[in-house]
Amino acid sequence: MKYRSELILGPPGCGKTHTLIEIVREALSRGVDLDRIGYVSFTKKAVNEAVERAGSAFNLSPKDLPYFRTLHSFGYHGLGLSQADLMSRENWREFSRMMGMNFDGITSSDADDGLILPQGRDNDRYLRMIDRAALRCVSIEKEFNDQRIYDLHFFMLEKIDKALRLYKAENGKVSFTDMISSYVDQCSPPKLEILIVDEAQDLVPLQWKMVEKLASNSDHTYFAGDDDQAIHKWAGVDVNLFMKCSETIRVLDKSYRLPKSAFDLSMSVVQRIRNRQQKIFRPTEREGSVNFHLDTYGMDMSQGSWTLMTRTNSFARDIASDLRDQGLFYEIKGFPSVKLEIAEAIKIWEGLQKGDEIGLHEVRRLYELAPKTGDGAVVKRGMLPLLDAEPLDSTYTYEGLVKNLGLLAPREVSALDVLRLGTDEKYYIRSLLRREEVLTERPRLKVSTFHAMKGGEDDNVVVHLDSTKPCVTNPDQDDEHRVFYVGLTRVKKNLHIIESQKKYRYDI
Image (tube, rainbow, N blue to C red):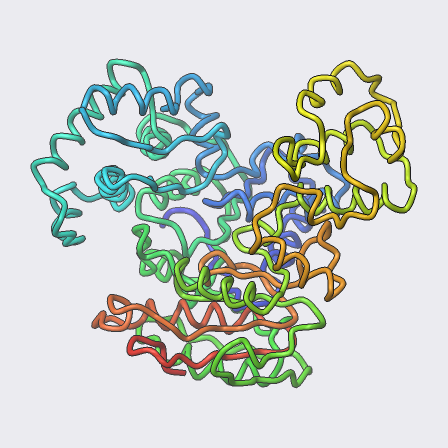
């Protein structure tokens, strides 16, 4: 490589982001201008964290950091694109009509989104294959042969690929992957003194081309990441590109997260990875604990913050169902097990019962969820439109709502009987309230996949060992070791292992 570079290997919890911000601090102390410092990643999460850290450390706003961007953002701005240039939902509907097929495609109102492969309809699997081929810098034929998805047909893949290229050309539209490839082919990178590439182990070959282009016009490039946490091979990631990106290597050798007991177990897993960069780092001084269970039912999760992790979204839903059966309040994919609007309506009704005054917004929230017909009607029909005529600063008591705005429910009626809820939902919420859960706050228990939890941490972590046949029977088990290593290393205090009773499982 013609540019100076350094690879910074950051094992779990070793303060990688702090180290990178210190590089920025050192550059600023030498008088390097902010527009000569770049910080890139393929995810918004990593870039946003860097912007927040730098903003706090140096009293800067995001506008002061013009080259702290995702790779897609570099492409978007470098090419001078606008939202109108991107494939929209309407464009995908039009393309669907033209092809006589249904596609959801890739859409976003935010041009700074990170790597998104098409999801949704079965036909989107063809789009996923086309996109992955571009990201891997291979032909669609090679991608098709590598994937071996036997219910897809190459002639249809080729047909869709040609038609999509023609549609985008005729309509002047680009995809998110097009942003990257066009930047590589057409754009001149900014002149930077320092370029930091975060989470570099997760870059696909096409993104590496873009990074190489940015680095070619930078005085010094820092690649940061951890090959042991490269768990996105399914998206086209080639960890070998990361492992050979620089001859100068620095290893951050102290974890500020992992307690000793979890460290020992995670090391026994990571050493199974055959293709890896050897590295030595130390755990914290905390002993922590490792506990084994057959399921979640015998576990005491009444205190503290918990994250329960599984191999797939399907397994995550199974865990969530178990928690629901136990009457536990949890979050999955960022959504609480009781919708916030329901939790707010319960709190509003309980306030009215106690004699509180509530605002117009609270009345609307309550009325939206209250039955309005039949024997169980709580509010007279036609009341919601009347609220539009009420002054925005109005306040209401129970008596006032009964007298003027059609409230029918007796004051002593339970909140669960005031709202439009199914029997199972009422039973579940009643059990949560008996536990004195605060439903308007974020749940202490979070259910996640290993992939979604990457980069996160929690005091108490539960790792479920269930896996799938394709994962377990894959001759190359490096990916499976990496996935479970990521899961085991999210813990700050107590690690809990749920041993699988199924045929396909990961053996610790």
